[in-house]
Length: 93
Image (tube, rainbow, N blue to C red; front, top):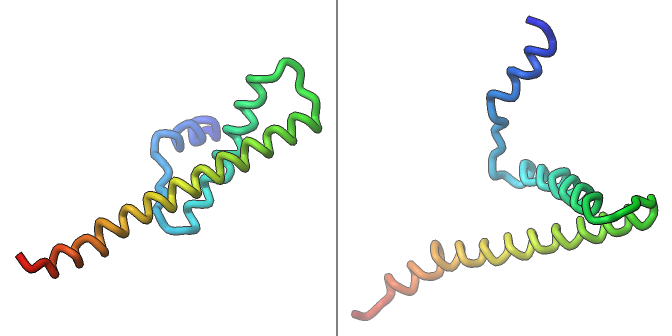
């Protein structure tokens, strides 16, 4: 099997990413590439320093939004699985 066919065949099997904290680090290169590509499509002329600064600001804002959304969703999941069943089981009805 030639190396090219082996590389192409590796794309037919999806990468398994679990939900443990270490695998959540895969979001960092994804967000970085999204920020760079988005900024590259929005500017007419790419100058190094302003482009890197704007990409870094976009990267930071996306990461802050993802962290805020994760905390909110974690809080909702905690309320549904821990807090709410405790309230319902101690009901006097």
